[in-house]
Length: 225
Ligand code: C5P
Image 1 (spheres, rainbow, N blue to C red):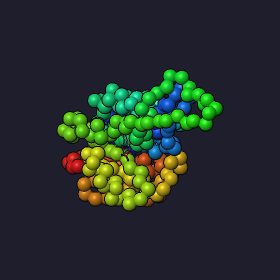
Image 2: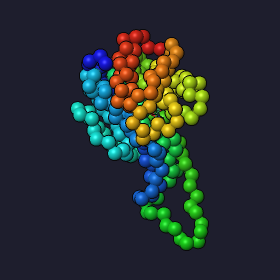
Image 3: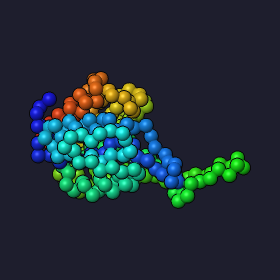
Image 4: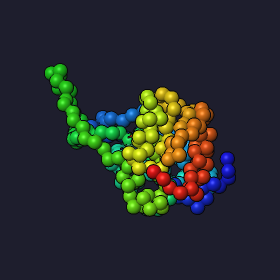
């Protein structure tokens, strides 16, 4: 692990799930623990970067020296990212952002009326935070290096490669293997314009350090999407 390989860099990173409220006591979310994102935030800080971590609802301590902004919903996460991104030189999106949110929020708890009727619920699509940032002038001019993550249930390489191009990011990181959510270890595949490279099974802390090094190496190379 090359010491201080991110010195002078400013990292903005999203982590954890989002929570999309239905009413004051209910909502939809997912099983993301935030562990990978928090491990990357810690590794980047140790590598000398200034780190701002935008975290959805997770039960994890803030890594030492990292600035943390807590959010709940995808739209709050997007607002927090937009307020910070102009100061960043690297953006890493590890958050498992809810794809949809309930179309309407009920100010009052939706009551079960005893009739057996169930409430009808419709959804609207959430903004794609990563794709939006990757399309900004800051990213397109090479002043912001963007990294996305992908969790696919099958055909990881093909889907993740397509996702890299669709999201417009130079580096896409795929979670290898099912059910990484909540675990302390993982295996990753890094996909860039030159092809793919595996980071074999290891703890998320070890993988985070390896990923930080891989990113540091790419920052000196020309950008390609
Ligand atoms: O499209 P999908 O959700 O599979 O893309 C995953 C990548 O995009 C992750 O890097 C995730 O953090 C990011 N993303 C996002 N905003 C969304 C959905 C995904 O930033 N609404």
